[in-house]
Image (tube, rainbow, N blue to C red; front, side):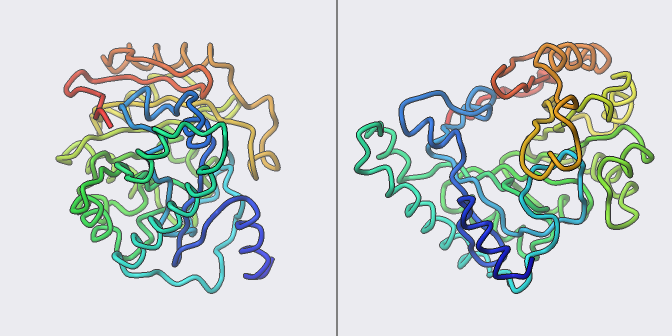
Length: 304
């Protein structure tokens, strides 16, 4: 697809394009605005879904993970990165536009709508690899200056960028315990495994809250948990999230529905991993098929 067709596709799917990135209302924002349940970030870390801005500063990625649901595989032509203030202002403006659609709906929780108009958290995790945005450090600092917290989710291919960031919580997505499995699952566009390993060491020495997030899929990466445990010793993260692959989006062309583990499998794998690492099983969200392990070093809730 050319640039125009890609933009049409993204817009149709609810993406509001801003600069080289986008903001998008997620399923959990919609549920929370109607007084319903909230996403795993609420259950794990106390983040209110209706006060969370789900965004990305770039739609580009340097991997093509088999399990990735994002609606495009190739870079979107013609998108240029905006400087941090312009980008954040544009993202927050589009978020307000998204919220305006709830004003007259009879199912809207008006109290939550009022709160949502004053967002407290920015999740830099919508799609793409955020470290490819040239002003990520400045963007994260600006979010903090405006009184909001931030989660940055990275694939670990740019450890130098991660080392400079100061988000509220830094995530590293780790979907393989070794280089061979990494190349098969993540299909990197370069020799990135040494960088991923370096990023794990960056996580260990970082001053912010740290999380390693593992997406597990049958037939792909659900081997002995001790293989992941040995690698995670390098990072010593505060938390580990073990999440089931979900048969959604573009991943359906690469993996079968059988690759999606049941929540019971996620729990079993997480608990065995926790035993290997010496981490406590903290909590889980069955609907999202995700479990949380904790090092016990810091409280998990931010109370937002």
